[in-house]
Image (cartoon, rainbow, N blue to C red; front, top):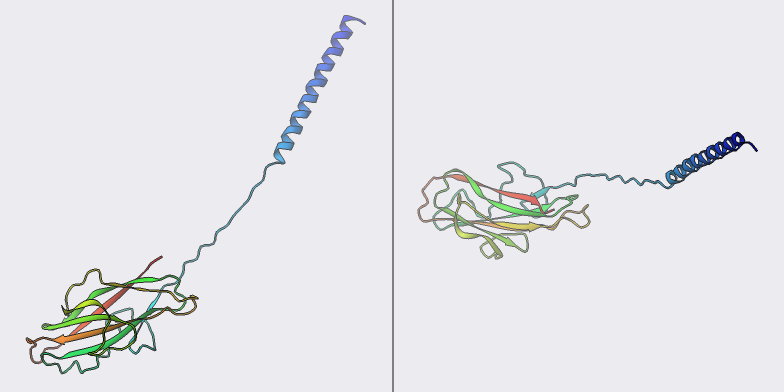
Length: 201
């Protein structure tokens, strides 16, 4: 065998080896690609609903979202007050059906119109609907508070219905307004309270 023949065969083996190596390399790449995988997840985000309603009779609830709102049914004629008189009005609030979270309700000080001088009030949270001289409950606003007095930190909680397709449990309120000794004949005024509900979730 000549030296030339030996060199030719050696080069052929090297080429064959390199070719085989290239094929193995391609084969390894294909095998690694086959081990790749993906998972996908999609979230859908929908806001819940939130709505508080009020009632002046403890039975029929509706929205009163803007002033002057519902007319409180004072049980003694508030249009003929004399010094020392107290008038009483019940009110109830609840979260409407399909409200998906509970709420903290803040009682804001009344916005007064006309003259409310020498008029004070007390606000109670009671266990049932109704308001009279004998009504007791948790005192939210202390007796003797000026009708147009500022309030701070006066809150109560409301729970959403369970299931949420039902309205939540009502909170019952009792407003007691008293005329002071300095009440002026013929004075007239209004007071509008805002009950501001904020979601707790």
